[in-house]
Every structure is written in structure tokens, then in C-alpha cells.
Image (cartoon, rainbow, N blue to C red):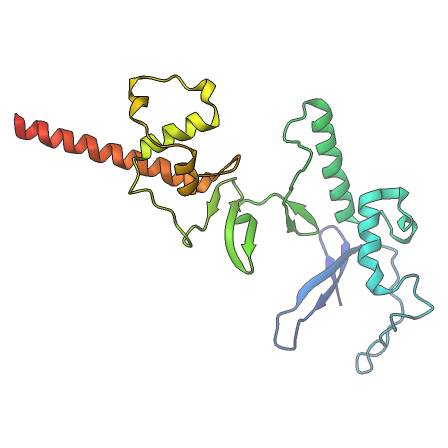
Length: 248
């Protein structure tokens, strides 16, 4: 525990620090502001140390292992929580930050509904005694037993690890396969022309290629198919240009 005094504004803060093991750096676990009239209680001598209170002590209002769930209930239900009286609102900057963020998002929803949905994943990072938006790094990671498969960056960019089971479409006419996909998804919206007569692919081909499964479209495979179609078209155009150059 340490008490730090700011000589400029004559304020003081009390900080609790802990180590994971004797070789680790100290990390700040709790911080509170001290009022000018705060009186520190009598403490045991340093060579004796404070006695650890048993978790089942009758002098405790609540067992330590029950505190996280109780505090979470207060965050969710506010003053309506059955545990609201056990926590001081004054000085709880984290609770104030959560409440302010919820109020802001509710106001946005009531005004325009912008950036809202039935399910919202809202990420933040600890900043001092409050929380803040990420300005770098990963916002969300989806793992498969420890191996990252999908990553959403702080700016919304999405990365996927597709090194396992990569599907290639070199044996297909990628542009024709894309045309077959468009026709399978919404045939009424497809404006057909004379080249459609040469498209021999159907749903069975799309499923075999891993692009379609039932009513679902594999977006990762679709991205590869689009890339392959562009490259195949580029190759064909380059070949035509080469032939025209030789003919000239």
C-alpha cells in the first residue's frame, strides 16, 4: 500500500499494489482518492503485518468470492440491485463510466438508432481508472482451441486464417462459377445474355467447390473465387494482347 500526495493541488491518493510472484513487477490493483480530513486507521507494525481475515469471518458483510457477482449485479441493475447498499457510488469511477456509457448509447438509440442492434459487442480497454476506445491492436479474436481463426482490428478490418484447407479454383472457369452463384442465389435478378448459354455450372458444382452449403454462402471461398476470376481474366487479356502484338 502507498499513499501519494500531490503538492500542487494538495490532494492525496491511496494505492494498493500486488505481485503475481516474488520476481514480478508490482501492479496497481486499487486506487482511491483521500479527502483532506481522512484519518488513517492504526496499522500493525511492518515486521508483523496485517492478519488475513478468513473468508468466512462473521465480521465480513460478504465473502470475498461473492463480491464479483454482487458488483456485477450492481452494474447491471443499479440502485435496484439487492447489493446496491453494499457499495459506495461516490468515488467509484468505473461504475460511473459504465453508467455514463449506457446512458449515451441509450440516448443515441432513442434519437436515431445509429450504431445499435439487438446484439451489440462493445469493446473497450482500461485507461487509468476508467475505460476508453481502442486506438490500436485487436478488438476481437475468435480462436479454435488456442489458434486464432478470425481477428477484428480496432478499426474494423477483418482478418481470417485460411491456411488450413485452402480452396483453390484453378480447375474452374471462375467467372462462370461466379455467374452460376448469382443465378442460384437470385435468378430473378439476373439479366441473362447470350454468354449465359456457355455457363455449364450449377448448384452441385458450387457445393463441390465449397462456395455454397445449403442456403449459406462461404464468404471466404467467395473472396478467393473473386480473386481467381480477376486473375484468370487478366491472364486471358494478356494472352490476347500478346497474340495481337505478334499478328501486328
